[in-house]
Image (spheres, rainbow, N blue to C red):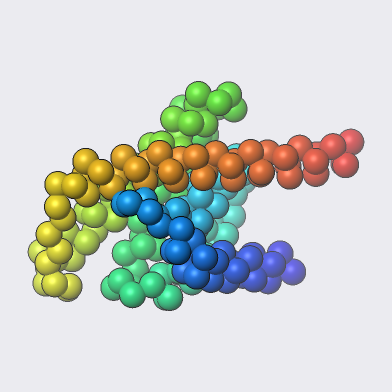
Length: 171
């Protein structure tokens, strides 16, 4: 039952990302609903996380996006593992500076890993070479870190409320 719920929520998140949140793009910032959900799950999920919960929305979004298949999924998967490792090993406390640092590093790692994977695919002639302008590194990435960071903070706070309410009911 839980896998069906995750699959249904993943479809809704992917459709929401491609229909509603793609229309919210302004300047060089595009809010990423799937990234926000995955980062909040990596930061404030339970100790034993089910990694398939990350793969399902990433694969669904990757199937619907027009990029070559696998780049988005691999970038999201690597970001989840890095932030999960940082949250478990380095930042065991759940104070706000640690959470903000984890979110900002997660968004930065996602953007840079996606650019790196696209550049690698261009070098291997799997796709046409994409030349990134300097504005991408000076404008787009800082705006994405700020915008998706605030968006992820909202999701982390929402997940904290849900988990604290669930723990409050058990006691």
